[in-house]
Image 1 (spheres, rainbow, N blue to C red):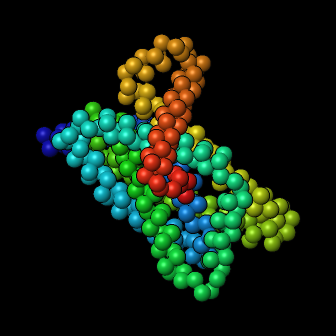
Image 2 (cartoon, helix red, strand yellow):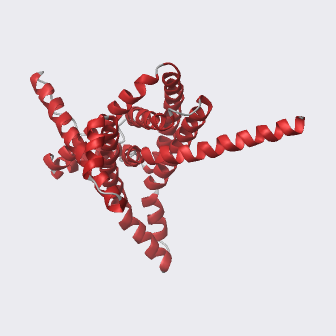
Image 3 (cartoon, one colour):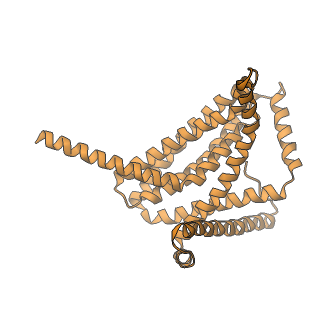
Length: 306
């Protein structure tokens, strides 16, 4: 009996872990848009920090991210257990925020001049290069800003993941959220650490000879384009994921998309395009409303996301 019970327990554990793996994969796909933007945003947070301090800053933000997850995961599980009716509204809020942030990025890209961005970057670099600047205070400000950004993005990731597993038993919900929280934190900040050190690695290799030097120059050439790609891909994914959340949460939109798109691969692509269009439209409306409210209050124009 003891042996049979042990085998049964092991089988149950294996079954749960298999389900967790599948659900985690689905949740990861759902949160891909947030993750892409998370990666780009957090890599940008350490821009301007002296090279010797880049990794300590990334590690400090990563620790803050772990603390964020330690707050958000139990809160999400409590909502799932006692107030599951809030899951869909929270997902819609998360989706709306995603498309708003994406639209705000586009507004900043097309309405703000490159000279303004370049001037801001130059001022940042000069401030860090100035020996009179209190680097400890400067880094603390950078770290606090990055942790705030991480909290918002982490909340979106957790809510989206919770929406995937809301119908599952509590144990599976907890395991999936923990795996997602730990995996994405380690993955994001591990990649961020690698990205911010790409230029250093490229410079080191470029000093060598032959093929190694060519590889170093290639890394130096590629690194800025990688950041641009991550930014563009993250923004596009925001509209795809956020729009998809809104479409599936609003039955009228969901039925409309199902009626107008054909089946097969073409239908999948058109469905994604429809989600993106909904995301762009909703994001533009929200940006317009926020801008109007700020103007009515006499405030400044909408700040571009950092």
